[in-house]
Image (cartoon, rainbow, N blue to C red; front, side, top):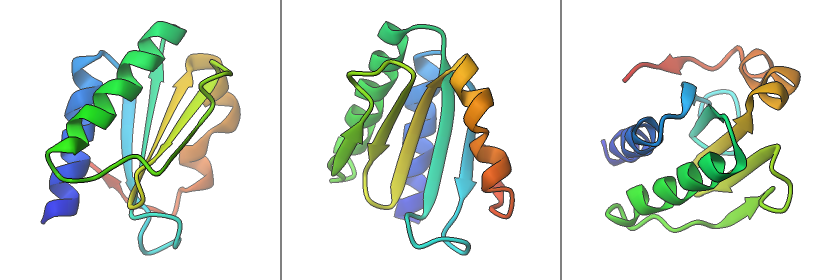
Length: 112
């Protein structure tokens, strides 16, 4: 399935940039926002930017373009909206504060 392959490519791109505690939530049965949320943590603003760039590059081969991004002026949380995949890149403290995994607890987690 192309969606699963694309989200796996994002996961691998994050892993190559050493994102921490990456989770992929399959939210398509609990929300119309997207099919997948990918949540990861980074230790610094430059690492957050590197992860964001790697996610964009990973989806080029799938013909998936970035639709919207938020947070680049604020280094606490980056959001990349690719339509069916939404990537959340947090610094460690803000990830714990917002706790998206708890909010989306009804969504199954994919393992790669």
